[in-house]
Image: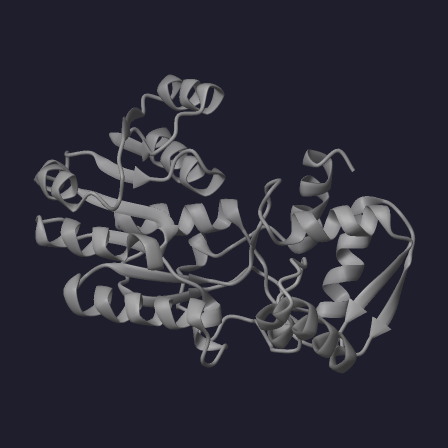
Length: 292
């Protein structure tokens, strides 16, 4: 492989992967975008940008081993608990520069099946894919279906009285997916020369209460918060979950509500690359995308 070989971006059928691939292609770099499921509109946009599209199942380690020698670097956007074995296979095949995605919550949450798997996957990559970067982003937001703040915006637009769980004081540092995409691209282009665990967050730290207020302003609608103590809610949710009732919040999610979620041991990001999208801007743009 040489520096002129293409960069592979896995997961380009999702907004983060698509944004990374388009960023790299916009610099005139050769990019191969992979996904398991085609998307007609997004595929057309990728191809118009000169991105080669190919199917790739990250669990097919034989295919990955065959592909690795043709690549200069790799960015795997599916969460590390899924992409970890692929990262090891790409590195074993000769790819010395790569980026994978974990979560800042790994450094915050104690014993938990989801984050235990991520911790194990991080350790495996650090041991078996030296030189690769493991990004630990805070809460990612900025596109419909982000699973985080898009849901909050919809709820605030619908509810004039919003039930705010917990104290409201826990810190939040959401990172816009476009900022995260720039950081990932910079790691494979050499603009950001870093490897190992890299915790990254957005440009502003807010309390949970402040984040809700910012999101409410983005909807353009009024409303008030109704503080709800966590204790009784935890008891009811645990009971109903034990009975098999599906709820929008799990006991594990409730346990994290009052934890500070700012980036833990944040990475030293070069000034020119630091996240720029403030929550006020990012949430306002997202509300428009959601037609709120």
